[in-house]
Amino acid sequence: RSTGGRGTRDEGTARLTAAMRLARARRDRSSTSKSRVYTDVILSKPKDYWDYENFNVTWGKQDPYQLVRKIGRGKYSEVFEAVDVVRQKKCVVKILKPVKKKKITREVKILQNLRGGPNIIQLHDMVMDPHAKTPSLIFEHVNNTD
Image 1 (tube, rainbow, N blue to C red):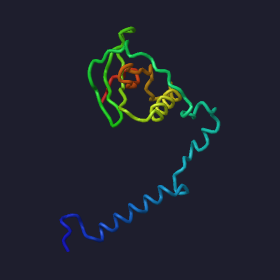
Image 2: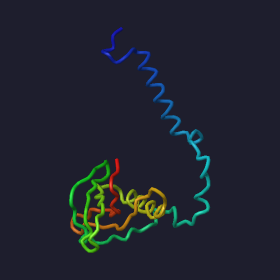
Image 3: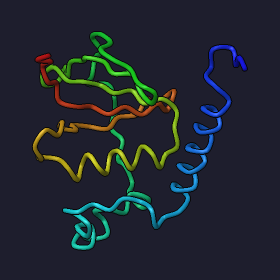
Image 4: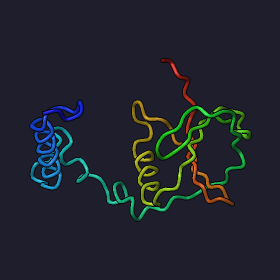
């Protein structure tokens, strides 16, 4: 029987069954994976390390940063090369698209916690557009070596 180039009915049923098993496994917490190395590392950290819901971001002013050119975009942000006009240094500005406040505070808290680690970009500042209330994150500029 022809299915219009989409495979046989049995293949479609098998895909649907696999998708249903995956959805059930995601709901069943006993089937989630567990880290073998850092299973309980969070227990040794103070509450302010992991509690981003009670973390308050202190937003600075965006005045010292001048956008130069767009260098990327994603689902939640647009990224620009910029210049810190006070320090006369290149930086990167990640302008966040409208998302829940919790998502932004979680990202800032994680970046602050990982600061200084290997392969972690330095978060220099968090700024807010006073008119549009658009948050932006200011990062160090790293030359692309692809």
